[in-house]
Image (cartoon, rainbow, N blue to C red):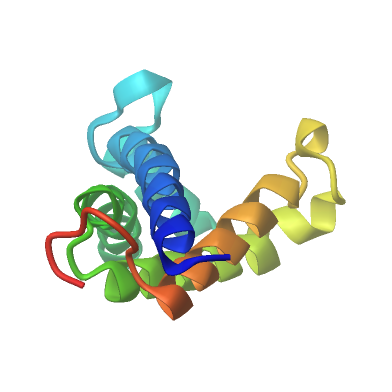
Length: 133
């Protein structure tokens, strides 16, 4: 594959990933798209035994929302993607793995793909049309 082709591929991956994470982060931060908002995420974190729950909830929501925005812009892509990879690995291990593979049962297939894509961006960088490579 040529450098030009891989640059376009990474750009498309950044747009898709960024859109997904902005939407999921907006659910957690603002309750958008039927999401739980920060208080709901805080309750989920408390239920998982994480303390202080609201600090973890805010960190999760910001990584998803701001990280998604940074991916779309191509700004600090490798840092944003690395943080998103950490969040996806934690989600895979603590929430989704026990439910099996398929998304229908809240399984890990979607989270696994997001984790792999985040690792690819963290490793390869932003590709084309990035604010800061």
